[in-house]
Structure formats: C-alpha cells, structure tokens
Amino acid sequence: MSYIKVCGKQIYYEEYGKSNSPTVVYMHGGPGESCLTYSYAAQKLGEKLHVISFDQYGVFRSDALDENSNADVKYHVELIEQMRNALGIKSWIPLGHSFGGMLACLYASMFPESTDAVIYDCPMWSALYTAHAMANATLPYFEKNQIADKIKKCREILNDSISPKKAFFTALEILNMDEGLSKFCHVISKEQYEGYLDEHIPEPHVPNDCWTKYQTFQKKLFDSVDFYEDYLPCIQKIHQPQFLIVGEYDMTCGKDEIEWFKNHAKTEQVRIVTNSAHLTWFEHPDEYTKMIFDFIKKYGRENGIQKNF
Image (tube, rainbow, N blue to C red; front, side):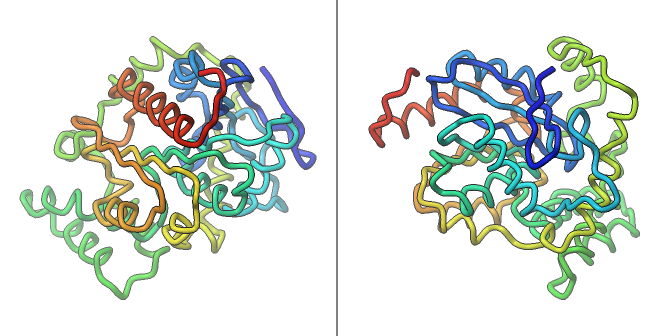
C-alpha cells in the first residue's frame, strides 16, 4: 500500500501506468466510498494513461477525520491540489464519479493551471438537482404502485420552495431500493455488484475500522454548508475541455444538468451510455475506457499535447 503525507494527513493512493503519459486523477464518490471499487477501472485506464486513484481524506485507508477536522468540499479540493504538488505532477485530468464530480468541477475552476481537462462520470454537481433527478426517476413507480408517502416526498422535493439540504435528505429517504424499485430504475443487483468485486478487486486486507470511517466522513460533509451549494456555474468558468459521461438511467445527473452542461460548458463533449445507470465503469467497462481514451487523445491532438499515448 502506498501513502503520501499531505498537510500532515496520510493519504492512501494507487498508481497505474507510466508517468510520461497524460495523468488522470480518479476522484471517487459515495460520498465516503473509497477508490477500492474503482481499482479495476483505474488499472484498465493505466494501460494507456498515468492514473492516480486515492481514498479521500477521512475515508477507508486514508487518515480518519477527528472531531476537529475540516471536511467541507473546498477543503477536500485544496487537499487534492496539495497532493498533486507532493506527487510532483505538473498538471492532470480530474475524473470525478458521482460526488467526485463535484470535487472535479470545483477543482478545475479553482486550479486551472493544474488542470489539463475534466471528465465527469454521472456527476453530482448540486445536492438540489440530484434530489430532483431522484424524485423524477422514482415518482412514476410510486404513482403506479400507489405508494402515498413516497409520492408525497417526491412532490416535496420538486417544490420550488424546498431548501437544497431538505431536498437532499428527503431524496435519501425515498431511495429504499426494494426489488421492484431497483428493476424500475435499472439499478444493478447486489449479487451483480459483489460478483464484479469478487472477480476484479482483490481483498484489501485492511483493519476493520477502515470500513466504518465513511460514517464520520458523511456526517461532517453533510453538516458543511458548501455541500449544498450549486456548482453548475463553475462549469462555465472552466476553459479546459470537459467530457460528461452519464448512464441512460442515472439518478444523480438528471436531464436538467445535462442540458445546462451542453448550454454553458465552453468546450464540451457528452456521452450518454445506453443500458446503464450510475455505474458506467461497472456496466460497460470496455466502452468506458475507450471513450475516455478517445476523449483524451482528441483533446491532446487539438491542443498540441504530444505525450506518449
């Protein structure tokens, strides 16, 4: 296992590929998951790229958050920039999945000189809009099955007067995925997911306390004010090429966000992955890696970047 000290914190990271290739930094979601489930995707990307994948501060194998630790979005972004400096990487391409998309977007707007391009994979750019996407995706199922309490919650979320924080937590309440709702929303089964992990991800052999760190991480993040900010406006501030990957049935990045991205990103490319929900890298691994390779090769050629690729 590899660790690097950043601002006094031990951050776990994995490295794939050769450093003379374009560098991608993988920002995981959750919030509070880890880079573990992305290891296979990072390894495949590492066949042509230089990939850094890491556990965010306070998560899994990285140092745990304590009572006095900061855990807002901006702080995590600033730590990522300090990690780049510590690793001696001149610039890189943030690749953010889900909550990691929020980090990637804010990072690119805060540190443009450190950013070559940005890739978003089913991103969460706004707690409010993500809540809207969840409500819009599930409401037809609840109406069809006459589940009154869930119908009421969906309509509360879609009410213009609701706060982002209230909408987000109400959305979490409606996503109790029974078999019927999972099938309706095209969510992969627990058996499929565990099968993927068993096949592609080796047992990490870490202490038991690593598995529960996310609880403190989530609590502090959800208590922070900037988690509920709308980061969509950051997209139009970014001049580097931006690539949006979204599953056809994703419930995190909805139609409103996709259209906003298309209309406001200065240099954009969008790919909707058919027959996929939130885990594009899991459901279509070959297509996932190819589209990222193609995007980076295209922007590199257009911007005169002649790295080994």
